[in-house]
Image (cartoon, rainbow, N blue to C red):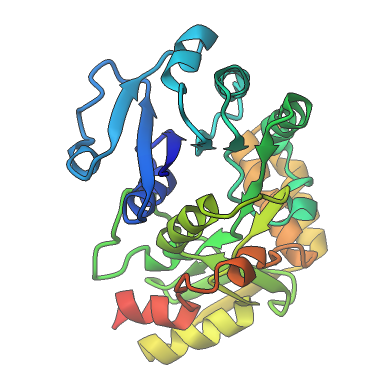
Length: 299
């Protein structure tokens, strides 16, 4: 019997990749939840492959409950740091509708690392609600999106992920690296995340955390890979803990600047690696290495 999976928030790069991978997987029926009053707008690439699109009101638990009728699994990629209510209502509706399990919008680094981010307080609220709900749930963790290495490349990036240079700017042949550069960091492409999540839907049970990894390496190795691919020497600056602490203090009052500074702090403390549980549970999922990904866009 097919698994019926509802995906909340499909238009961002992550939701797009997960939906595509689910539709590529046999015996999975996909329901897309959208706030749009014209649910078919922009979703033809999914509806043409069998996805059903439902316009929802995240402020209405009865509306959400009716849409989730018959759904086995809910996967959310909603990133709403200032308003957890849409996801909290979705959890309540899922429980009422008889949904079996729920994956909130985690998709970040290790639990220890995530605990250091002020902006992730909404995620912690959602996780607490999931524990109270009795629903089976998991936190998908994938480290840093490898896709950022494609920023500025001559080949256009595939998919709708919002791109920007993060730590390593290959286009400028520069990098600002937190710590020594030898701390372990996990990178995974958005496309690989989608495939891992689709494979996880087929698992009999979910543990509370499901980490995945395209490659766990170091930023110093990333620089060596980028230099080998591009044939250019990179200008590299390292930030020590004092500089990072100062940046965090100066960023208070600006949530996004603070988030970026705290990310540097997490990476400098070696908390950027993810336990690759899903790699072991679904070994058939193909993954992309950092050097191969850079080569794809920069050769």
